[in-house]
Length: 119
Image (cartoon, rainbow, N blue to C red; front, side):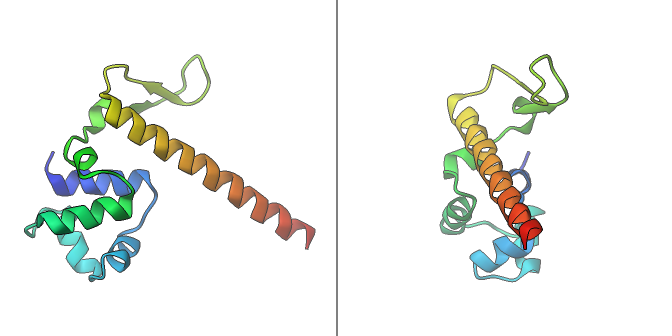
């Protein structure tokens, strides 16, 4: 998997849009899309900025391997994910961070919904 594809997968896991990434990187969406499609050269300073926006390390992006992460399916724990125990610690930590962030976002959104129901 090329670097642009890895960036795209991590962006999608974080539920960020290309528009969001482009805005944070102060570039056009078209320009950012070229990075994800590996159609433009990606400088190391730009990769550092992308990692900062994604809240991961450059190493996490470079070492990203989606096939080793999570298989979305129901398992006996009922959480909907089967974790491949062969994950390197960095990748496991990255996905634990992503899951925790998404749980926090869900709780926040539930609070907003509840407050709107009471209004």
